[in-house]
Image 1 (tube, rainbow, N blue to C red):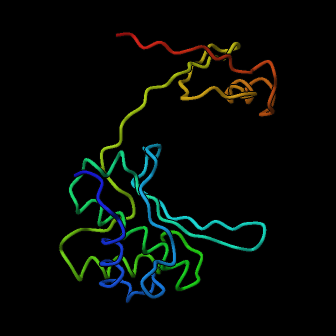
Image 2 (image 1 turned 90 degrees about the horizontal axis):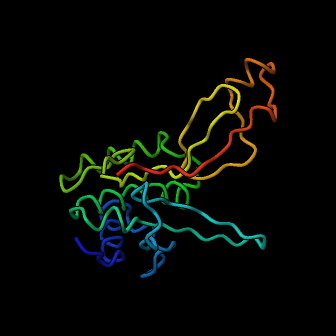
Amino acid sequence: MSLVPLLPIFHRLNREYFDSSLTSGPNPILSVRWSDGRLRKTAGFYRKRSSFLGFSSSEIVLSAPILEKLPSHALESTLCHEMIHAWIDLVLGVKESHGINFHRRMNEINSSQERFLITISHTFPVPITSPKWLALCPKCGLSSFYKRRMSRIACKSCCDLHYGGNWNKNCLLTFQPFLKEA
């Protein structure tokens, strides 16, 4: 499925499952958009941003890399999942993640239709990224893979064993690029 406009789907789901509470007249009370391509581990998220002047804005962002290759029911379930988060925050005024209000609304929507299934977490295929760094402990030789280089990170096992669980510079991990064999 190629990227489709999100607002028509948002408005339909808002009418069907949220009593149009996520709009003010014809306009959504939050923005709904596709990611810029960097969202690759999760299908979507809802967030509320507050500025230092007291203004806040909310948005739902859906992953273009994950959802564009999946059938429309994956898009609908993800969008509806994030709309539940928005509804709890903006309409109910409650701060919760996947609590009782989320489960109640999710179960109501799932039992009222068969087009898609809302779940707590998705099982969509997520591209696997290989590690770029290999970290080595100079004391014990233990190695670990990392996707990015970390600073001032020490081997926990050696810190526990030799320094009573306290961080020590003698256990600092050294990083080297990880070269995958072809």
